[in-house]
Length: 403
Image (cartoon, rainbow, N blue to C red):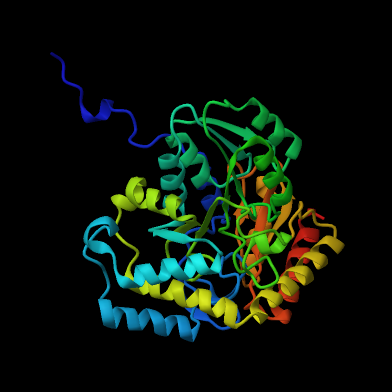
């Protein structure tokens, strides 16, 4: 029998969706860059680039490096060490985990909470474990990839509704199998567009058709609502509006992990059925302690919430007045639409050359023709840096023919 040699094998990796080689050849590649030092006022020291204004990060309230949070993490290491004895269900649960989950439940006005190793894992595990064959899950078209992957992993019928289109959502609810459970899932703030789900109408429709509601608050906690408590506060709605309250511990909260808050039955179910909770290591002690302290800081320093909202308005208004399309953003995520992939990549390079750390987001992550810079505003940014960043983006946009 003729043997197949290694040279006859297909390539180990399929073709990439991004033309990375083109970006590198053109000097437009600016991803996976390593920060070597965190500086005050939302600035960073980046290898090969020096000091830059961080306009592409998720530290919305500027809590990375906060002394109270750092002290809590260090104390946890002194007390517990750097790891746990395993998965939470067996030997890996610490008193600190219970304290963090109780703090999250209090902050989100829920009965209880569960934490997992990342936000992605939290969505994947929660959705895939809750849904069964015969159930229906209905998603906003622009939901985060972790939500989509959780829906695909479940055995439920998976359908989508057009982004923030309540008439289309109602049609999907009407079409859902009445013999199974129906779960509607949406981001609170959409990670690429910066707009907010129409929670009052989504909630009304869920009640009308007997559906459950899950909201991913990765980009809303600390950002919206008068005191930063999120989307229910933003709309002035009751604390029990959302059945499954999901969030991360790695954006506004400067740590690692994800959480779900809800009623006792939901949390007890997830602790015994969600595979990524059962089979993944516990959140490390330092991360748990940092997260717990961060929720305290948000409530103790409400000026941060007001500042990020003021910074956003100043930045967005300057860009809008200059002629930029910012889609429907109303939060700290500002999509600076450039049109073509090449335009977005070149504007990102212009910003980089002027000391601003911000990246181009292009197809397939966003639709063709809507390539953009995704600027993320922080409460740590000074007014001077906000104005500087806006001025550079406007100047670059004019030079490149974007505006």
